[in-house]
Image (cartoon, rainbow, N blue to C red; front, side):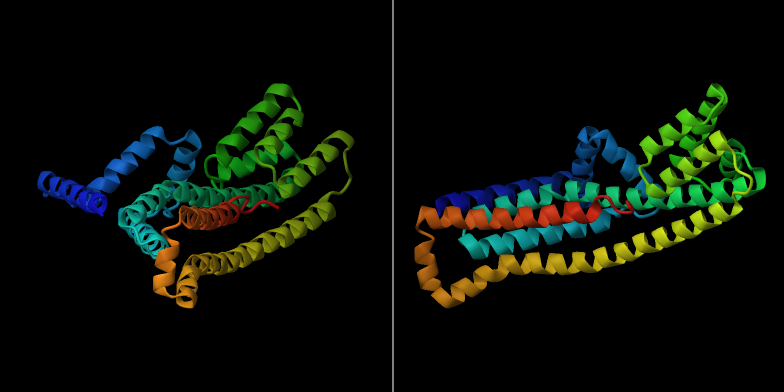
Length: 300
C-alpha cells in the first residue's frame, strides 16, 4: 500500500512540475509534441513516407484527435486492468503501455491510407494508358500522354517518368515493365503490361476489342476491391466491439464468484499470472486484427 501511495505522490509531483514550467502552453499538447518529436526522430523511413502522404491527402489526425485517442487508450486500459487486479500501479503501467502503442496504430492507419491511394493511382494509370494507347497505338507514347496529363501524383507519377526514360534508354519496354511490375504488384497493371508487351513483340491488327475488354475487367476488379473495403470496415467495427467485450468478461466472473471470493483469489500469484496472460493475449488478439485490417488494402 505504501508503494502505491508513493507512486501517486511521484505522479502528482511530475504533473505539478510540468504545469509550473509549461503553464504558458497546454501541458497535454506539450507532452504530445515531445512524444511526436521523439517518434519522428527515431521512426522508420517507411513510416515517415506514408505519414507525409497521409498529411498531403488531408487524412492525418490532428493533435486534438491524437490527444483524444491517447486519453481513450489510457482510460480504458487503466479501468479494465484495475477491474482485473485492483492495483493502481499495475493499472497505470498498463495505461502507459497502451498509450505507447498509439504511434504503431498510427503507422498501420497511415499504411492503409497510403495503400488505398496507391491502388487508386494504379487504377488511373492503367485506364488512362489504355485509352491513350487506343489513340497512339504506342505504349511509350501512351505512357507519356498519361504522365503529361497531370492525372497522376507522386510516387506513381515519378515512377512512370522513370519507366519512360528506361524505355528510351534501352530501345524497348522490357525493363520498364519489369520495373513497374516489381514496384506495384497489382494484377490489373501486370495484365496490362503483359498485353502491351505481347502487342509490341508480335504486333496486332486490331487491339480495340481486347483493350475494351481489359477496361471492363479493371472496372469489375476495382468494384470488387471497394466492396471488400466496405466489408472490412464493417467487420472491423464488430471485431473491436468483440475484443473489448472479452476484456470486460472479468466483470461477469466477479459477479459469479462474488467480490470477496475474487479478492481472495488475487492473493494467489498463479491467479495473478493467469490474469496477466489473459490481458496480454487479448491485447495481442486485437493488435493482430488491427494489423490485418490495415495491411494489403487495395491489393487484389
